[in-house]
Length: 474
Image 1 (cartoon, helix red, strand yellow):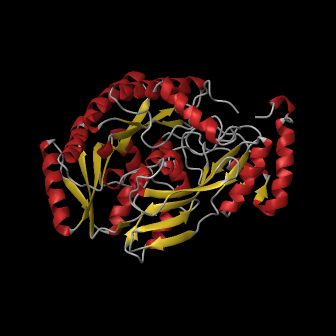
Image 2 (cartoon, rainbow, N blue to C red):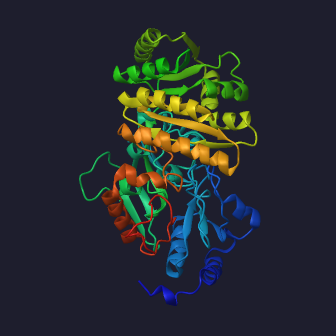
Image 3 (tube, one colour):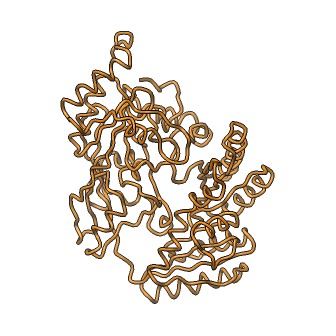
């Protein structure tokens, strides 16, 4: 590595880089104030910083050009998709370039017979499914919101359907990745399994743009189910609802989705999404998929388990419009809470534990919430042990401190039950303080060694995913 004392000041390096980028990419490079502001932050975590410029890539070659130039000048680069991440992933450091991949929306190949496809990283899952509608196939990973598939890879996203179809990790076969110095590599392939070499695909899934920038994704596709049925069941008691969800999974019911919203969340969602037919009490949202006979069997077992746990009966949503209305309300949960307390901050937690420990965790967290005096909603993908709290607090340093204190208690409970501080949101900067407690110092040093090997100048999303340590240089 060159002696950094001979490297020009950051502002001078950025100025030189922007001149080069404009020579190569022309009007794909923007320093417009409003464009930079739109790329200064994601959602939820209130952390923002203007990038020096935004580059709108349209091809892998564009990304390679940007990284090659920025690597030579030690200028940081942060990949940007839809900007829907919630842990500060896309907030740039000082003197950085925001690399927007949202114009990379091509469907490059669809192999219907093999149930796979290849797409550019800026395509959203919703748009992909629109383009697949005549094939009888769909892509099932559904984190909610307008997430891009590249961003979903970068954060190892999952969502409401993960209990049945798995996360991005299980549904990505291969990638095209641009490395820090601009070199392009391909990982994986189209086959469903391989025992050759290191699993580089899995290395980049969840790496949050710190090891390379994903430009193309080879995805597994799934057949559209013959029948879909959705239902809700309400409970007077939160623990009864959690127990029902756990028992459904332990009984081996191949349920497509099972989501929980507690009384606080339901009150907000009823008001925001017009669910006036429901009561503001804890509610489970179910979706059943498969052949008609299979769906009937799933329903019978699930209804029996809910009844045994004091469920108040199933209300059905069988038409596509009714199902869409229910799931839209679930996906809009954050905004429902936000609307309930205008001017407040909403801080989201994202813990996961083994399914057998979920009831213990949620009951303990409910006690922590009551002791805190804060208004907090509980919701989550309880079928795989993942749940969130939405902590509402006044937008003051004191309010933020109280919310963070509660967040730390929730994470501590999850880690004590062999869980994780994040089931799907990722680390970004919001979860950095919990990483050593979860993984241990030695594991973090191995991660830092990988980071240094692949990004020796630390230009790829610096400061995210990994707490600083002995091997963390750049």
